[in-house]
Length: 56
Length: 99
Length: 207
Image (cartoon, rainbow over all chains, first blue to last red; front, side):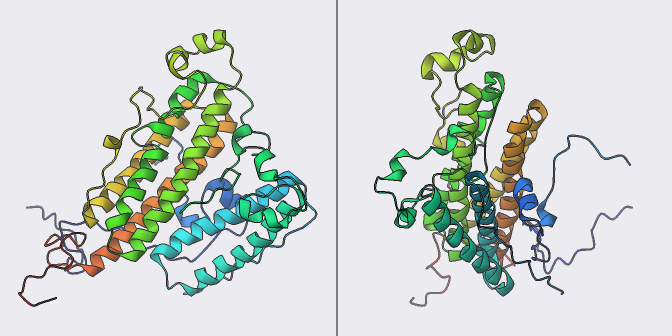
């Protein structure tokens, strides 16, 4: 029988709730103009839209 | 965790209106993004130092823009030598062109 | 309170009018997942939010959304500026034109006027934050849909900027949710609503 329990620390993340991971400011774009055109100074928050599935 | 010291931006004061306005927009944008980060990370002292750096630069840029061109807010009018109320006559931001 | 700066947060300079895409983009002006909805949602929720960091975030993001509302207004205005009556008719803009000429009026792409039913301010800390997380994703999806329809780079650039902001805001509301979760009992997050029951305790001790 398949066991679908995921190995998560349910003590830290009780069920019946949703959790967004914390961002830590490690990097910012060196080029402010690049950050401005992208829409954030944080590279890890840059999630562009392509409208295409990535190739496997 | 290694934190890379952000580069201190160098600003050339010999800029035309469009370029100066763009610099202001970019520096203010960094402040807005950092401010929201600090709303949820108020104890991140690196981020506090970073935003203060940018705020200092922005004040200087806005003062310059107001003295050379137009006040971006009514509170910048004190930096203008004009005797008329530029605020009432300056371009509106949706007109296109530079902004 | 609010001050005004006479500049847009991100520059908008559209050289080619196009009422066809204006009809679509106006949905981010007055539509259910648009910038005015977002702003009113956050600025309404903040008054009864009992945690200062979260009320502060709602204020700051709600304020930025007003700047985005202005950007969308500028985009629609520049897309419809100086159109002739023939162009208005040909590009399907006549139904809007007859009621508003070329003025901006907050409505969705489908014509539903802006109204408060487009957002909720439920007065429960957790519920409102989940509302806000969903709102940012709905806005992001709307911008994805707009990017599929629009090819003019003068329009795409500010739209991509606005879309990126939605993702950042989602992260911030997610962090606000984590802040709230830390203040609640993890055995049962739903035992009480800090916005309303904040001063009531189970025991009969006097507070």
